[in-house]
Amino acid sequence: MPSTHVATRHNRSPSVRSNAIDLLKADHRQVETWFEQFEKARGPGRKQELAQKICQALRVHTTIEEEIFYPAFLEATGDEDMHHEAEIEHKAAKQLIAEIEETDPADDYYSAKVKVLSEMIKHHVKEEEQRDGMFAEAKKSDMDLETLGRQLQARRKQLMNGADSRHGH
Image (cartoon, rainbow, N blue to C red; front, side):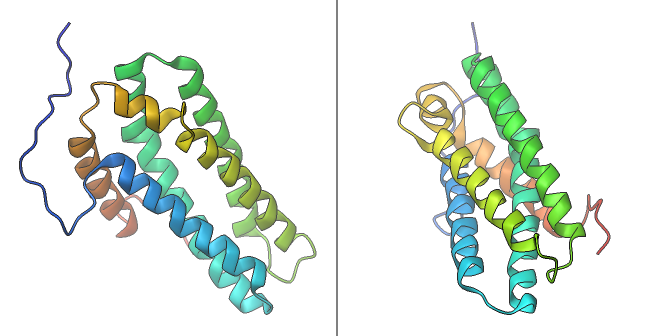
């Protein structure tokens, strides 16, 4: 049965992370760094600045995964269990992200909410990146990770530029 994802090896740009998995892993590392900085931060202003960066990055990351990577993964692998679990984990994280964005950094529960979000994301990242996880399965499949990477980059750019911003801050 022919795949709808035709693998191509041209137009590689060394300055851009075009492989979908490399791009998504880079997002994971960036957010992990911000969570670590949040843990060490003292003032409410700095905590809020980091929490906003984390929440925005995760909103964009979950959107591009759900719109582009996850459907391609499901189509290529047929692994509904792994796909559905990832979607549910995203939904839970997005609910907590919304709570954090609506909470004042001076609130007693603010840091606790960010800490719980950090733990949720660590679990989710481990699930995606482990040896038998979603990324490993994607690499073994016929997914065109280069093309998907370019699609993820383009959609991220749209979201970062506010083309699809549903949040007014």
